[in-house]
Image (cartoon, rainbow, N blue to C red; front, top):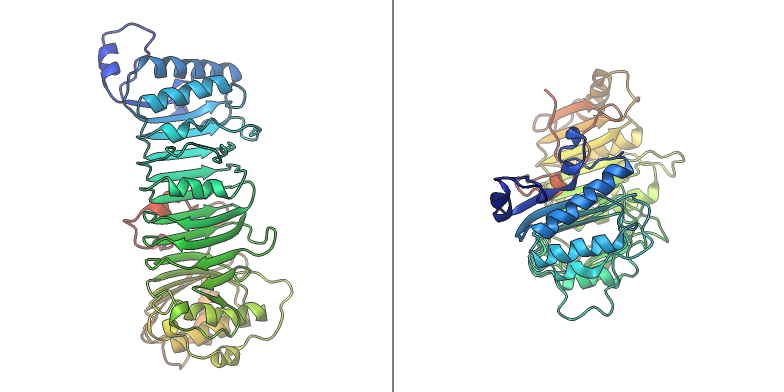
Length: 438
């Protein structure tokens, strides 16, 4: 990026005016360490000065604008200036726009609807804003080139706004919600271009894959799933869905016209054959959850990589032993498809060991079993490994064909946090996989 302030003369000014613009307003702050990061604590005078510089730069440069990162402005406090920025960005063909409100909790008024006139926009991220009401928008309002959309702590008035966006974004491939505020998400996916949807730290009421023929990944993480009743997941038409996680038994799941419940008889119409990677959160000491797991797994007969997070239970219900899992019946993906099982938050409880024993003895294709211990449950990894080997492999079939790896969990605050880039990175075949320490 060539950066020369447009209001000061210099020999680089003609070059600056002719080059496509890349604008980070954080670079205009006096702190040279700001780099490309979003500044957290900045003096109001410095923010005002940076905003004034942004206005001058946008007015002086004729475009095109490759990208604009506007992270240093109180957009509720100066809506006239922000509206002018958006109008200039639309006129001059901005391709990537990151718009972050400061301070983050002031979302009393809607952001201007100028976004829908940005015909060249390919990436859009909005943070700490109230989305414009789309009812009454002109028929021509659209994002004809938008490929990536991120909504971070964005409030929407109604459920139709998201449907409006999807209907008018014919090239949208990736969609991310981070900290969605209100109302709880009711997401109806009708898109023939969408590849990946990620939802993090957001209230979710329902997700319905109505018509999403190219959808490959659905990732839901760290989201409260009991807001206003259980979350509902419906898979109607998503024939390419290859990765789904994290499923939790508090969700109501429907595949085709079949509600998946304990002991549901799963037929071909209730199966998703494309699914290869599945991640679950599961309570191994709750009998009702355990009853549902076999039915759920039967919906995905071709799963090859299975990730399970064992959730802590304070008040167990029922006895879940090896016999319980044997009586659950055959599960096709377990018996003939799963090559990798990663079991997180292992505490060494009998209910966990009973499931793992059943899995190892049933899974003919299983090549690797990785167990990540929960913090504070074992004095050492050797203790955990010894317990697992004794319960699962001592003199039993499956011990030769399956490699066992037992790891301790990363200390709190030292683990690798999930980033939306990881889920969107299609060069990574399995974004749930982690690097095993040597």
